[in-house]
Amino acid sequence: MAQPETKKDALSTNPREAREQKLAEMKARGIEAYPHKFDRSHKAQELQDKYAALENGVETEDAVAVAGRIMAMRNNGMFLDLQDASGKIQVFCHKDTLSETELSKLELYDIGDIVGAKGTIRRTPRGELSVRAKETMMLAKSMLPLPEKYHGLTDIEQRYRQRYLDLIMNEESRETLRKRSKIVSYIRKYMEELGAIEVETPVLSPLLGGANAKPFMTHHNALDSDFFLRIATELPLKRLIVGGLADAVFEIGRLFRNEGISIKHNPEFTTIEGYHSYMDYFDIMDLTENLIRQSALAVNGSMEITMGENVIDLSKPFARKSMVDLVKEATGIDFLSFADEKEAAAAAKKLGVFTETFANWGDIVAAVFDEKVEHTLIQPTHVTDTPMDISPLAKVHRNNPRLVERFETYINGWEIVNAFTELNDPKIQLQRFEEQVAAKEKGNEETQMVDEDYVTALEYGLPPTGGWGMGIDRLCMLLTNSANIRDVIAFPTLKPKKD
RNA sequence: GAUCGCUUAGCUCAGCUGGUAGAGCAACUGACUUUUAAUCAGUAGGCCCCGGGUUCGAAUCCCGGAGCGAUCACCA
Image (cartoon, rainbow, N blue to C red; front, side, top):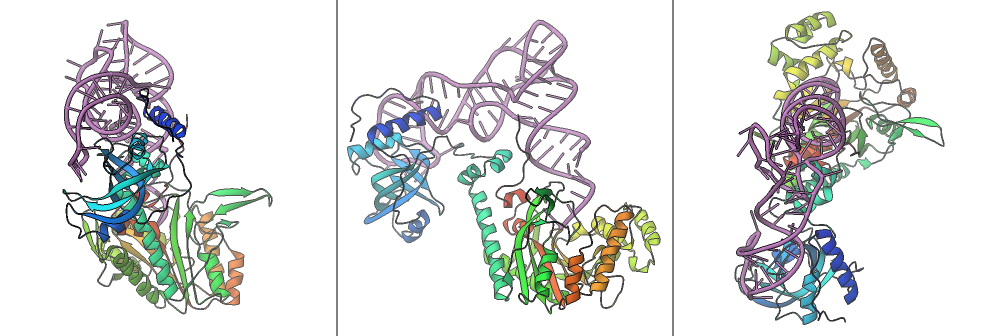
């Protein structure tokens, strides 16, 4: 073992160079900067919990081994704050407990390094649980200085571009993404307990379907074929119900929409869609409402959530109101009283709501709803009985031929769930697809394509089915009190940096 | 895509009506061995986002561009 007897040259004042010099010194002393393995006995939080009752100033003989990133060094390295994924623990490096060789290692350590420490548990007279180190070990040398310890990393762009740094520095970011993981895990468990099986359907699809949105396109070289990235998982999932794969199937997966980016929209986002044989949309209302409620309870221990100034109560039954009734409440106008799109368009115009010239009755009702009602739905509300014109995959309402059995669940003014009693009559489905094509010819850019194979699947027989989709990112925003969708996505879409 | 705003040291930020760049933390040297944003003394550290222009002189004013943010439009 080399002895650091001779007075060393001063290290560079450039943080990176200084770390290179320390790396060289480690090499000279035969210390590995990136060893393969360290056997730790406890996570930081395990020790904090286990010794919660240990009184101030008490030393134990309990030997432990901890590891983590150095987040702070005080008194010339006498005190190291180690952070691991569970929490933080202080390592106490006192000269009375460390050999000369061990003591001299401290000068090689920097804030940001991953190190291990073996020693005994004690609580300092001032109350900080610590490991009195007998030995420390470099586990991974960090070559770059961390952001400032007090203010941390606040630059929003850098937090998203270098999420690892954000996670090192910001506990809230770690908490949010951990909670997201818990939410998804809970949802999966809930669905499995219902007897639904999880499936995966293609992301690459030659045909667009299941929603109205602008797609991303790509190309497969060997097949010399263009593909869309999926905008929904709906149609393949219902094919699996036709096949009788299971009474209920669900998919948690990424959708891609080539549209604007906002605090509520990321080009790739995650949804769950579920399809349940022999359910109708009333059953699905119960199912999704309960799922949202139980998810909140599972991750937050509460059915109350706070979004900005809004306190949202998930514990009571969600309100159930029809779209036209909500519009009527907000505007005093009953759009069901209008026989056609001309009367409806005139009424919308009076309300100051812009509608396209090709808009049909349903488009106009939806436009008025979007403008006058949507943002007011802070408390959970199932908005039911949507116009048929805008719902080509939903089954006609059992009491009104202009409407379908569909609902959208709004919370905090955001659409969280979209669901319906599935249309399973192949002839009517084909007709609806054809209406979409006709609407496209009239100028509506966002319509669905005819999926002939899907119609064929229906011809073999889709049982009465209830289906639903939920935006996982938005649910995560609600349950983590996040104002921006990017906070609940580990690597949100950013414009590539060029120059 | 439109409007407004932001961009200065590794990080967090000052920098006035234009006069040639500052602090704290991090780093380095030293003191100090029971600290908690440790403390004290000192040292070093800059493509002031990029490109033009005005000016004797630009971080600062003007024009163009980039990235980011907020609002709006489209959407979940």
